[in-house]
Amino acid sequence: ISRFPPRKRVVPVSWALRTHTGELAGVVVVVADWRLFAGAFAKLISRPEQTVALIDHVGRLYALDMAHWPDQGVEPQRPAFLGTLSSAGRPQREPDHSAEHLAARAELPNFGLQVVTGVPIATILLPWWLRVWLASGLLLVTVVGAGWLSAQLHYKVATLRATVVAARS
Image 1 (cartoon, rainbow, N blue to C red):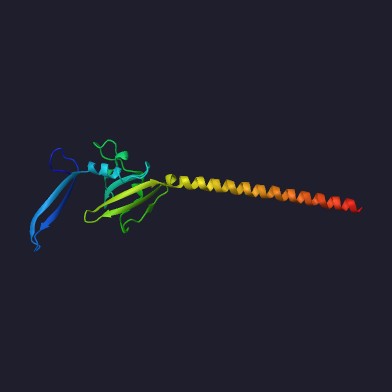
Image 2: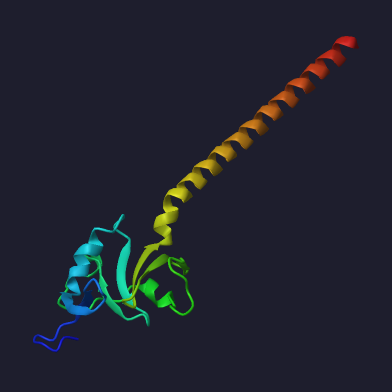
C-alpha cells in the first residue's frame, strides 16, 4: 500500500546502479500502479474464457486481466481456480488441475510474484468432445451397416441353399 495519497496499491521495483568496479552509484526506482498489469495481461489472453492473474507467494491476488477486472477502481474478484493453487513446493510452470479449470503459473524471479493463467477445462475439451461424438457416430453407422450387410448376405445364402435343395428334390 502506498504511503502517498490516495493510498493505492503500487508496485515498487528498484535496481541498484553500480560502477565498473562494483561500487553502488545509485538506485533506480519505478513505481507502477497494479492496474497497468490489467492492460498487459489482456494482451496475453488467447481465448475469452482464459484468465490471467498476478499473485504473491502466499496467494494474495494483486491484478487480473481487463476482461475479468472491468472496474479497476475496486479490488479484483478472486477467480475460482486460484483457490486450488498452493505455492509450497511447486516448481515453475507446473500445471495445477482442479475439477473445473486447468491452471499454470510462472514465477517472477526476485519479486516473490507469480503470473497465473487459468482456462475452464470444458473450453479446452469442447473441440475434442465434438470429435469423440463424430467418431462414435461414424463407428455406430459402420457397425450397423456391417451388421445389416452381414444379415443380407446370410439371408441370400439361406435362400440360395433352399433353392438348391428344392432343385435337387
